[in-house]
Length: 256
Image 1 (cartoon, rainbow, N blue to C red):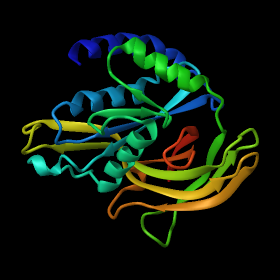
Image 2: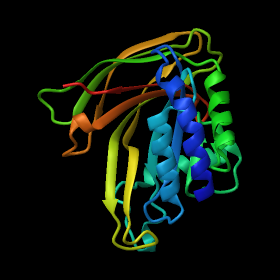
Image 3: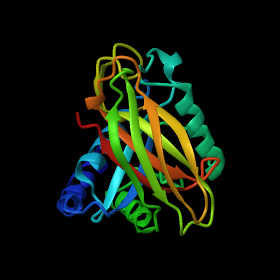
Image 4: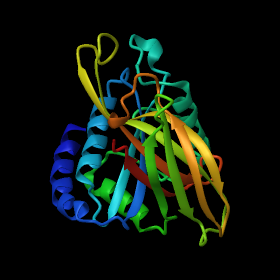
């Protein structure tokens, strides 16, 4: 992983300038990282996800990242404060849907359809480019605002154009922390300060996109108590049922 990191720095630096120049009509790719602060091999993957998020290595595409912290490492000396059995179940759903052997950490899933293994920078960019080249459902998040009467309640208007789709799909809304850190006091990463990007707090199903139709609806999601809305990114993605392929996504931040 250390040798790989050097390759990533070079490759992503070359691609970043082009990636940042892309406009709002660019394709999207959803990368989900299943990780844990109790796993000694996870911090390099956490760093990699942060680099993908920051450099946007695929010209003409927006790579939307999510960190989903599983809970099955919590018994091994450190309870990950961002973990949930919900993310463990989500990972197991992918393992079953993709015909994989077993869930493990760190594990990255691209657009709900492929594993991304950190073997080489070239392999990572190739998988991301292939995902970006697929025809995607245009997704928009607008009218994003905090409810003035209910703390932590976020309102949004979601639009998705499924007129070219041949299958129905579900629409999910996600609230994720832009940045999170922990000083790990025990377990495999004891003594380390760990940093994470796009740490998922909530994923809620907010609707269904019927094939060859459009979706336009006001939706809402509730942040965890005490969460500053300014520190949150809101993601919407369209995914085939039963942990199928992700057909489109969008990301917006709350502007006060």
